[in-house]
Length: 495
Image (cartoon, rainbow, N blue to C red; front, side, top):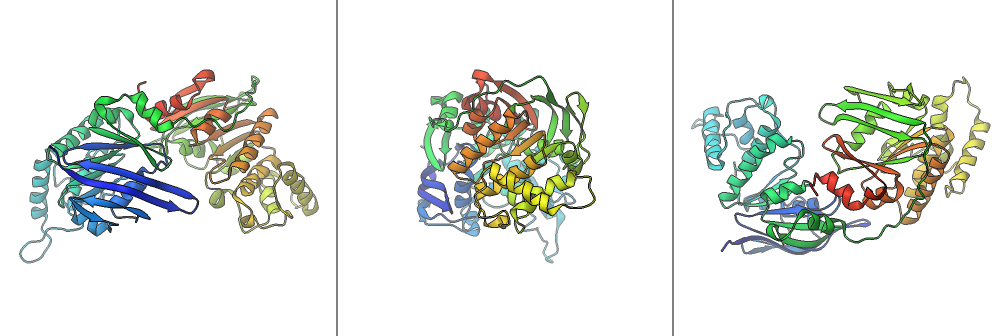
């Protein structure tokens, strides 16, 4: 019988306005791969940060190798044999494989000088233990993506490892190289190491896992043995039965359209093409890291692209820069409105008029007219404020977001790209934003909306494009626009 090596009991963690973990239990056995799944923000990362000692829980306890702990520090965690391999590879390009393995504890000879030979020898012992084949003296700059990920895992074994946490290890890997990584993971499991495996790829869970625990909204929903379930059950647990909160009366779009053709940027976006009709809300779904925000930044001209053209009403309007995009009638509401979308120390009227001033060809400002127009627009979308002279940072999150909308409305943008338009605002403000989007589509505007909120995506969009690993893998329409389908294609599920 396998021995339980980790048990989390009643773990609770809250942040202002957010319950990240709510009375969560979790356990792990030696020689087991226990998969941890859930939508973005479900609480997975918070749990592993508590286990690894990066953050403290507010309530609950950890039992590790039969000893009880209220909280751990990173040093405590590592001394107990817990090692975490994060999604991002943290390697030094100009150093050898062996040097990267022992970067925090380089081997020295009797004279206390650094010894590459000793590092190489110890590296070979680690590679033999987990059965991998890599040249210790090779520079990291010459390694493939999968070799880098395997190196990060091997580096964990420069210390004693009894519990290995792998956070999205295949996130940047192609399917053909995943098998190499899976072989390494299975070898580690065979050595009796307990593995906590976080993944957004449902297929991986059934390839590697012994058990799977599903998180949703900071709560543990269920733990299953892999042989007892199928992909549909996992997805159903992740989604739950929460009813839709918002509905949109679908608009019949006219034939004029925006065409996004072959947008690419190496490592981020791969040959994405789709079209949006005038008067349509086109939703873009996918997991964090799928390339959604990177795609719209390319379209708006923020980032340099390898390829891609934008056509509107048959005319090439590909922006060369954000200013060029604005002049061509394109607006972008960024995900972080306070950082990129607003001048928070400036009054409302200056924020609303900013984009129109960029588009203006006049040499002089007409302040009286500017204030009158901005006040009309602010009233039009119900920005709650005693005066348009109010400093933006003093507004609620929902009213700040309305200010961002207002500046594009005043500038009369024909194409609006909305990146997480309702993030961080309350339920009432969300309803007003949805109503505003609906009204803009009725006016014939083209609206592209990125959101991680799947109920929002399904309820507000006319069609939905799903991004995964930099590609648009599916466009959902009509009855196929369900939360289950959104999640299935985002995860790469086969159901």
